[in-house]
Image (cartoon, rainbow, N blue to C red; front, top):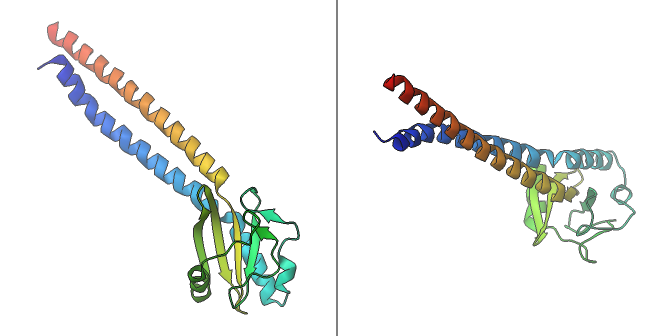
Amino acid sequence: MNKYLIISKNWLGYAAVVTLLCFLVYIIAQQNFRQSANDPQFQLAQDAVNAINKGTDPKLLTGTQPLDIASTLSPYVLIYDTNGSEIGNNITLDGKIPEMPDGVLNKTRSNGINTVTWQPRAGLRQAIVMMATHKGYVVVASRSLQTTEDHIATLGSQVLFGWIVSLVAMLVVVMLQESMTSKMSHA
């Protein structure tokens, strides 16, 4: 059998295993990055829900500093009343009050909690945790996904580099094995 055919045949098995492992590492790490992007929002939303349920005026729980979500990485809290209107918020998107889709607010009211990725415009993605209060308010805690997506892009580059290095290393191993096998059979 042709030496290069043997090397290719033996290398393909290793390549398939390396590719599968790199794919699994990427998917698991990417999902971990994305899921952990919600952690601060869960805390902010739960604290606000607890305060409203204990009688705190929702207007006191929103930030006083104006933030434009198009330019901030800071987490923020929005509160919607039973009619779906924002109350006491200083959060804007390009100078206008951002609007949550009614369906998302209604789902939160019926389920008690809702997590979504919101893209109010191209290139702007937000990780959102929403929680309903006993009084019918919906607390929306959110933050930009920019840093998380930057981490995921870096992860992709690292896994790609590792995949290529591993494939080349496996090719070298297979070539050395074939060389040793050939030498032993000729001896």
